[in-house]
Amino acid sequence: MEALWEKTSDRLRGSLGGACFQTWIAPLRFVGLEGKRVTLAAPNRFFRQWIEERYLNAVRESLSLEAGEKLELALTLQDAKLAANSKSRSPQQELYGGYQADPARSQAPPRMERGITLNSRYTFAEFVVGSGNQFAHAAARAVANQPGEKYNPLFIYGGVGLGKTHLVNAIGHHLLSNRDRRLKVIYLSAEIFMNELISSLRRDRMTEFKDRFRKLDALILDDVQFLAGRERTQEEFFHTFNSLHAERHQIVLTSDKVPRDIPDLEERLRNRFESGLIADVGPPDLETRVAILHKKAAHENITLSPDVALYVAQSVSSNVRELEGSLTRLVALASLRACSITLDFARQALRDLISEKPAKPDIDAIERATADLLHVRLGDLRSKKRTQQIAFCRQVAMYLCRKLTDCSFPTIGDHFARDHSTVIHAYNLIAKRVSDDSAFRQTIEKIERQLKTCSS
Image (cartoon, rainbow, N blue to C red; front, side, top):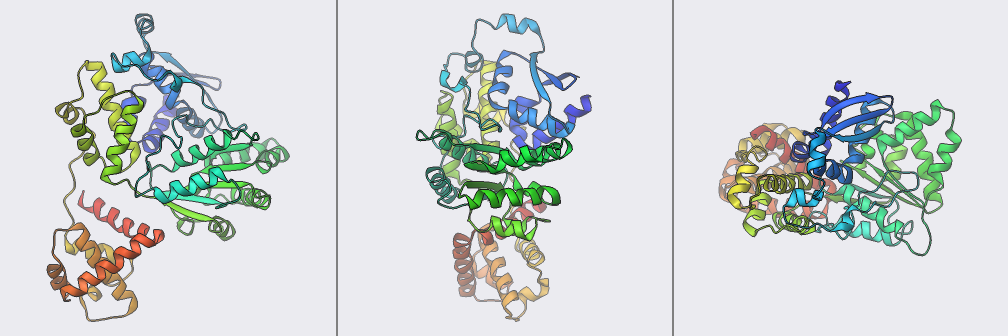
């Protein structure tokens, strides 16, 4: 059954990020499977408690998804002697040496109404607001304060590890803290929703399934893109959506793309998703990444020097999860080696996780990628043709050339056989639309990702 753990590891590597996976999941060892109980061994007590507090649900859920049935998870120690030798030290002391962590962090997080446990760290207080997530954060706050009245449904989309799950967990925490009345809230992933539907169909318990999901005050569904192509699941979710929405009960959804870009999604569901507020979560800028690192370090009672925070923030720009994973690795290695986190130490500790920055794309590469994505012939971009589609594609290419290369406006203009003032106009025009139109911004980011892949 080790194949089950290998597949689960691959899934966790993708969902948690390489740095986080290598630091906390890779050291775990598969012990065995008895009935529906999987046993994993951690290298020491600190690792075991860290997994129990932060990653237990993620590991258990991934195991269940790979096995096709609900499994239980038990954590043991690889060497029983380690447990005896470390009983005199707390897990926080094992990690931080002399630092003391906040004991409140070990308290059990609130549980949903027969749903998945919320992550205790994902609250509004722990969320760092920046230019890339400001709008989504404000929308999440509004929904948490007035569920069912504002922005219903709330659809949050963005790339992996940018904070979507953090925001919807924060909404769940806020709703559960309502002092006026006990709200019924369920938070789960689209995959779990589908698995529960299949289980209910198999056991002829659809009445129980419908009662559970249609009598809620709030339903929070993560990663709805996984509903794509699942006709029976989409049908049931459509009726669940309608039932909740008709009673003005809150629906919160997350996805890695806007509704119209989710393939094999029924038109009636797409219309429902687009009927509320769609908010995007973009990559954090440098200042936000530095703030995130300092906040996470302070949360763990760790002093992080400005030069180390800046180095990590400049080196890890893809997503917040990778950023947190890098910090976690620094703290863990510093504890194991009983040394301070200096800039030289950070460079050495993260050398395997931080790759060299790819070379900047040239004008030709940008031109090809833009023409390909916007379905325009490459030769038309330098021609005198002024049709709306060709002119728009040309403006996008000019904008990206200015943004992604060191070329001046006149140089870009010469390439496209245009005056430099035309390039300036195109840059300003596209920049404004990127700022105002989140869906268009996704298109630009898609071209940038394509260019990054080609140059790496």
